[in-house]
Length: 336
Image (tube, rainbow, N blue to C red; front, side):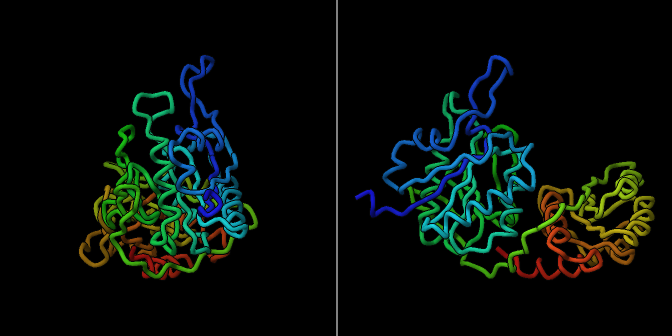
């Protein structure tokens, strides 16, 4: 009977889901590997044949591009070796970012699922085992095929495009405010709410050094000096987390005009949800003015993900002068 089950490859990268108390550190730290995590989940072996690997034991804030590209290559190899899907466990602090970045490069139709935990394994009501079980159940479900990278937390599946961490500590931390959740799991089965949609062509895997792209948040009384300092310091592109629908102060706008002549400048909204505007506000520092100064408006994409998209574009060989066009073309194909 077990031999008839689908194969799911599970790899651990660290995070709260893998953490146990350390007297020396005074708190929990990553210690458990993928095999230990899988063994802690009741009923997991009834869902799939599990293959495990431990790729990293890091808090997610310390994961880097090289770590994620290694995980991506590992995941691709598991599918080539016959796995039906892949699950990566990691910390939730950067989960929305890692899911989005991996989705930009994931070229297979097989599901790649990311999950983690908001409570460490020794905590009352630890959510890690339930999340891992739900992730594996999603990975083996046929409706998950062709949807790119999904985040599964709290019996809910999210598209990498829309997911964000909406609460620092709550178990129900993850939300998809604009696009809506991908699926809910009921009695162990995911029900998807959207038809599969065309996904952008996966980007080429970077071979060299990843570019430095700064994200600067526009705030009250801000004249854009930090953005200027970032470019002087060697950053190769700027993402501005702008106020409202893509707005900055008069002084900041003047600086953006000068900076856009040097590096790609992308404008996102710092609001929790909603899109940048394109033709509503015409005052100095509003979206029409910033576009005229050479900045690119990124629509529904959050500042965190806009930064990763620009980084991935440059890393995969898109010329700085072509970033605006690449961003516009990518946005047309991301309606999930």
